[in-house]
Length: 315
Image 1: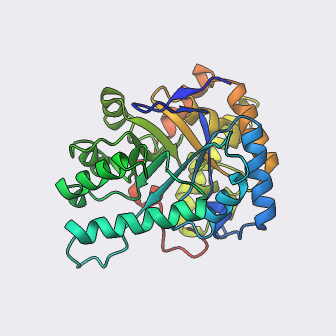
Image 2: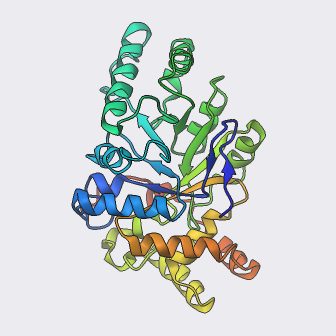
């Protein structure tokens, strides 16, 4: 398997990374509950043995950090790259944290993450759902200080939408990575944002490549108010079938071989799905004629592609 350098870091990463939100809380279509800790750990260890060395977690993913920590606590000499996050859960009308309060909040979050993950330092910490109004001189000094002290080696951000991501990149911070959404139905960011990441040597980490299960056999379970999205997923499935592929295989290959991507995340609680995704990666890029058909499926409706809906059973 060919590994990639993670932007301006010295980290070598597998082009596939495993996202662990599904291991920590109910998620996706139908809000499926995660399996036992033991089963999740079995999946994580299998993924690492198969060559995946990038694992994505966050404090807000339920018990995800604890499970990742348990899985890799006994492998100090071969520990994978574990990327976690911190987020701010302030009230919308509350003034932004700054100065000492901002430092205390970030340090407390990272200290708890280190404890749950059984780590002394974090390879990568990401500002979760990054807000550009918090990325001022105080924030930048805090992050640089955390690196000097060895608690953090690299830092980045996760974002939604083009405007927010472009603002973060232009903030002056040393964001080594940017994690954002991308799929064969959601190609909105590849025109401006992705080239900007490449220009800045900011590693691009792609998520939601299956649109939380829509680009799989779960699309028929979508509620009636998301019928337009279901129809587009059905069209994608027809393209996959004609090419002799499953829809998940096609979705994974579409994202993983995006020329701007460094890591493409997939979420699973299944060894079978992990093997299938690694197999899809080994199959290489999609044929040009398939890509041309998929480029016609682009959706630009934010309501259909938004990460959170008020629709019951979708999160």
